Length: 130
Image: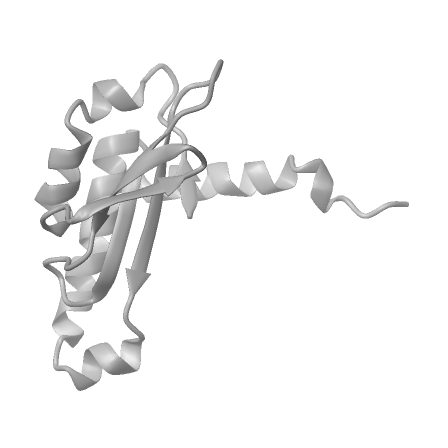
């Protein structure tokens, strides 16, 4: 499960006041919910795009901090997608993910990558003992 921060000065509620509707718009009907760190996230069990097996997305709420978007995109193996004749859907899947994340977080792919790099660099657990 990946968690994404919102753009500075923005909140998840402002960017996606109807998060369930936004998830359905990009990926298909929500078929249930799943608990993650005390939060109920939306599950799309049968996504519209055949590249995806399952999608889990929702708000990860933390007391005293801004909410984050928690998302897990479960995708079929590339060989299976090609074998099923859905290779052309792979490009649409990438676009759907990027467009969804941009709309909800307000951050483009480059900004999200840079943020993930900084969070890894800032993680004291990853620093070896000298």
